[in-house]
Structure formats: C-alpha cells, structure tokens
Amino acid sequence: MNGVFLGKAVSRHYVAFVVTIVLCVGCTYLLNLLIKPSYQAEASLVANIGSTTNSGTYNEFLASQMLTKTYEKAIQSRYIADEVISRLGLKQTAYELLKTINVRTDPGTLVIMLYAKADDPKQAVEVANAFADSFIADSKQIVQNANVTLLDKADLQQASIPVSPKKTFNLALSVLIGLFAGLSVTVWLEKRQLSRKKARLRKIGVELPELSA
Image (cartoon, rainbow, N blue to C red):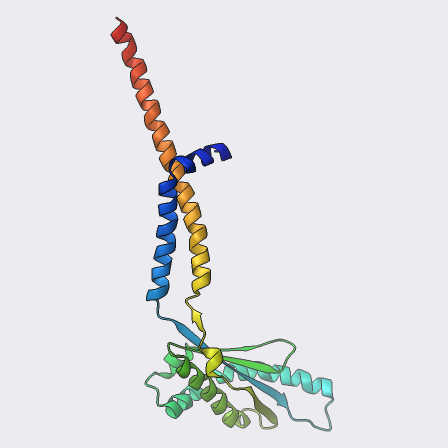
C-alpha cells in the first residue's frame, strides 16, 4: 500500500472517512459528559528529626528522610483512617476510605504529599486536611523526638479542577483514533470495490468466448 492508493481511497470514500472521525469524537464527547468527574485535594507535610547535640546536621537530614518513608505508610494506616471517619462522620469503612488516599514522598526532600480523591471537591479537601491533622496529632506516638508540621492545607480552589475524566486529552486521542479508523475504513472500502470490479471483469472475460461462438 502506497500513498497514492491511500489518497485515492480517501478521496473516493471521503464521506465514510469523515463520518468515522465524527463518530469517534462524538462518542468520546458523550462519554466525557456521562462519566462522573473525580476531584483531588492536595495537602503537604514536613517531617524532621529534632536536633540533638550528638548528631550532625547531615545525619539528621538522612534520618529525617528515612522517617518520611515511615510516615508515608503510617498516614495510610487504618488507625488514622478510623480517626478521619470519626472526625468527619463519614459512612465509609477504613478500607474504602484508604482507597481514595495516596501519599508520596520525593527523594531528597522532607516533604510528604497527601492526596485525597472524591466525587465532590469539598469532601476531597475535608478528607485531605483531616488526614493531615489526625496524623500530626498522633505523630509523636510513632517517633517522640520527630516534628511534623503542616506545610500547605488542601484548598477548595485547587481541588475544584477535576482530575478525571481528562476531557481535552480524551478528545485529542479520539481524533487520532478516528483518523486511523477512518483510513482503515476507506482502504477496506476501496479494496472491496476493486475486488468486485476484478470479479466483474473476470466474469466478462469468461463469457466473451461463448458469445463469439
């Protein structure tokens, strides 16, 4: 298959080509409308080991980095989740609530990022802040000489932008899929038309000798 054949196929079956693209984009647009949006709130914490006279600054930094990984797991514990449920009066179980929570630490920093997803941006903000507050209140029970402070609270302005569905990305992807599908349809139609044409010519070629006789 070459470009000339492809160009002829599209020019002869451009209606099918356009309709295929419109169908792909239209279906994606409808799905974007039907899928319930999901919102994500983001809060950040800073954890570090308290200074002691027997440890250097670099050692304290390394210890604090190791501590953030411990806290990453601790924040996502059922104990903290149960406290959040009690604070907010949620009807979810701890397991269900923890599925909406994601905690991440970046290597080389002491910052702990806490993400909460929900169908409502206000609830996402409340859950993220409740996890942060509950963990800060209980952090001394894990490591007594560690300090955990709230760097940024989750706010409604940031959480009001839905994280899914990604409408622009989905529409752009549907255009690419539509182009590929449209080309495939036109090539199939062109090949089918050529096949029928060859079949008719072969039929005429067989019958001509009988007619001449």
